[in-house]
Image (cartoon, rainbow, N blue to C red; front, side):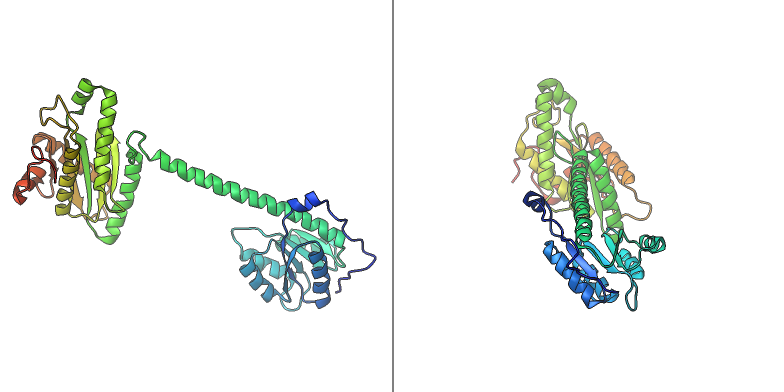
Length: 359
């Protein structure tokens, strides 16, 4: 087979400068075992302003395809060893997530040859000797396809980024900026699974603002919103490790997810929350507990097994929260330790945070 760059073959008419500016040079992989064919194609492609990658056989072409990811492949059908049809099939296997246009070059142009080329994964078929005018037209069509594919990829990436942003926003509480109930449950599912794999302790704390309805009734909902934001900041400030998570559970209830936190550490964490909130000195004129806003909390800690679920942990924390309220509020309670922060404070000889400022 020979491919002639005949002096009688018409050259491509020079494109308008504006059209040239709008086209991007293609990276064209030529796979052909005939030196004269490669030389002729090199001349045509260089004149058209494209970048050429030459391969003398199927193995070299496949290697260049994987390493350099060309925009278009010009592939000889009849090569020694692996022919063009099998080469095309291997090229397609090498890019399961993409589609690089493949144009076959052949001295035969029967319907059967065309059918075999399409079945092997080809996109077009050129008969040798190749006319520079026809080749130029084919490559201009490929340029439009490449440009369209790039736009689709960009659009797809933008859409994915927008969806991820929307997903993040859907899991954020608008008032406090913490995770909302949905975000909390998704995060807790992940942390339960991680703690199960790592066989590490996981702590969940539910926090409730004491007598918040009375606070709203006396000061109004605008002040109530300010109060919730301040409580949220205290919870967020208590989360020092990257995986610690504060969330608004609903209404005046909040939640904390504390990975790799044992029972003793959970109680110490609760005291930090109480200290941070006390330091904000949010006056609560109607509270029977304290002159400032206080919180009650329920703590649960476990090393999750195959039967542990996020819902189970939230239920146990909620039961502990109920006990903390029954004990008089303004405290945290843990069933696992059978201890609240008031008992814990006395055990360690700490200051009474209800009457003394935090250090």
